[in-house]
Length: 292
Image (cartoon, rainbow, N blue to C red):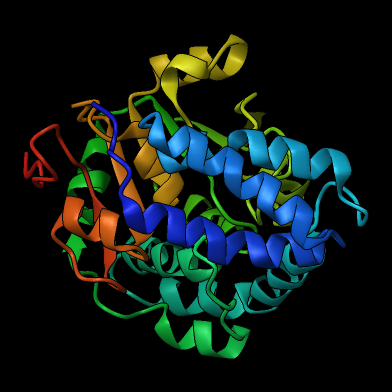
């Protein structure tokens, strides 16, 4: 059962697409077209990632500023986080379990998100949050699951956040096969294969595209190598709210979610206040923590 949209989803799309249309060099007429498409699919009960799919497809087609309108932001945040990579790596290596702070940092880096219509954080402000406590924390359960696993799939989200994903994969003691899945086409500031390569993720994992042009992974839409890897992975780490929305309700204990709660719909589903950091599995019981 997918996460159901609510009235707040439409308001969020309106806020977001005002910025998206401006960055694409388009007019209010195009804005109304995008929002009408979103409203149509939300009324059909589509989850937010699916509800915006046709609007993003159209935006890529008619944008006057290229189909990757957040390219500059993606490059900026990737470079900013790379500038701090070695310092953070050495800092985490000095702890008893370097993997734990790396996972925390990768969770809080989910704040690099244009999908909710909020301004992007300044890089120096973001760095201050990377060690903050998580509201829901199953990092140790995740690491214990890796001890019994042969294959790990990380489903990526935002560019810049990718650098902290790389840091975890660099520091982890897991010796099995590592895959990192990106979006297939530009959508918001989500990472593509080339963004993952810029972050250096190709040095620590095999990069694969989801083959899906929406800001989420929905298993029924996967095909080819992406479908094979998803179905065979022993442990899956899904980054960001979009992937949470796409995978919600699967009752799959392989899947751990890592994101910051940024909207009331997800807040109600997880019972975590807005702004809370989440690293946890979820099962199909209305947002109940698996605690297995």
